[in-house]
Image (cartoon, one colour):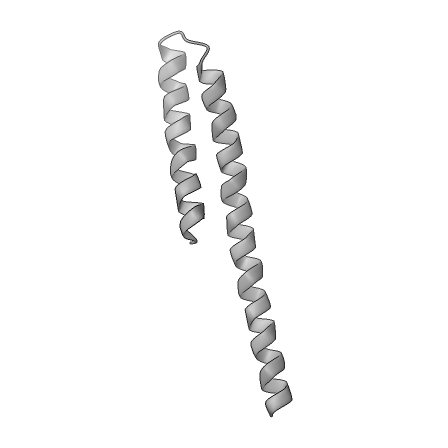
Length: 70
């Protein structure tokens, strides 16, 4: 798993925990934490998909090089 994806996943988990704490204390500030959790969740998926596409592109490039060389 890419490092940035791990960081954004950690931010997402911490934001959800902060939202739960805020809502249990009766504060509406939890809404901001929920929004931050949503953004960081989307960033996590983005970095995971990007890493997957980069790996696929590298595999295709290696296959093309092997085809040209052999």
